[in-house]
Length: 313
Length: 313
Image (cartoon, rainbow over all chains, first blue to last red; front, side, top):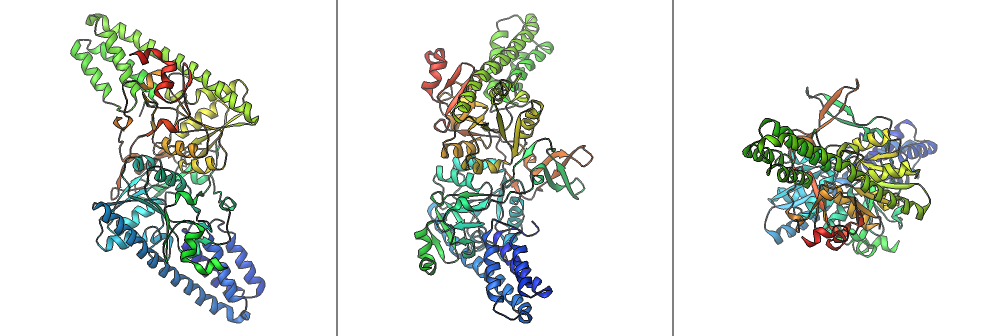
């Protein structure tokens, strides 16, 4: 969790391969590095995508050439993430401008977890449209969901503060009430993996927001750069949902009165804990996907309009 | 929050009136006490119910007789809550036995917040059926939702531990994933106020669980003693939803490494917080109400079958 956010996990995996090639660039060394990095996080597909790309680039080369090539390929991967962020953000910002045009008042966006600067190489996925729209003068306010157990919503609040964007933090439980009371114009979340049919696997709790948004006809979008789409995945129930340490639920980290990092225990070992890291929102609850190539329906057909080369594959 | 749980708030309000009558049993004193206690919590209707009952009992009496009468009336109110808990628990336990009969395996119950011993005068509302069924030998396991921001789920975990009932704590965000994956046979929650049409106002986050339960055809019940029904309330959007202090979201209390009570700050004052205490689950998402008189549909007609005297009113 030093590195989090699917796109950043991908880029870090690529650089991890580059570091490993400095130590041992042999074929077994390459395989070992790939397996080691691959096992760190099971859910975000970006990591597998980055590692496959690095292997495909490096394996045909003689081992002595691999270290330099790996470094260049990782840098190219990171640079592409910057481009993906910006292109996706531009398409998403156009959506925000359109929705604002319909109401004429401050746009109310709800998000979940953190899919901003801190989760990607550049300006984010779900937050990129908000940043670009705000920079273009759109009045926008963000409802930031705390996102237990790791409270990544507080990272989002921190980012928005740095950017001077109005926002309000809520506990995850409050999302249904706000959606029911008409306080939200649209929900935008990131994604850790999107199936070929448009099902969205994202941080645990996303699904509950999608259910409430669907119930109250609030548009629900996932911001999804290409490397987050798992084209081979037809059945999203097969996604390995990372089960994380129970300590994340038992203990909460913050800062003490003296503003030093501190932790409190909420629950001792006498009660069991179950801590799944992600859930799956079925495509029919997703109004659309915001990608670097534009917006599309969350469906095989919708994705094929933007990625025709995949359709043929 | 020294006192929490709608039934316990009601009983404590009744005893509050009894204490006030010792100080000043005049008509203005009675009115003042009533107004003061009434303003402490806006959402749970049990408090208004208890105060109205105390006033109706005391106002016809001469002031010198009020102190003793108030004490007796408060004790009677508390005794009745014990009876309500037991009767409701019995009807709810019969439901659990029936559901267990259908599957033959350990019954998986999900609850939200705390509606057990710590929220009522006796064995609780939502948890009473679980206690009685467990005591009768039914194999049962409870999914306990943390219930941010006040983490009352940890009170539920503590209660279940005392009672030797298997349970697993989850963050609120995980409820949708568990319901989608078929891990839950039924959801039982308490209530702070139920409208004459069966809408259920309960701790914030209840609505999200109801949406997910509805989506996956998992029965969703509210355990509702008579005093929690607001017979005059036709439009549940009129319920005053308590907006609680933002500090509840900004700070988390637990215990330190030395097992002393400690607190950490998650968020400083630079970000706004919105902290509604309750939400409303519409009746059509509620499979049924468990009351002291039996089970009924969450509707005006359903309630009329159990409370015909109210229908005539």
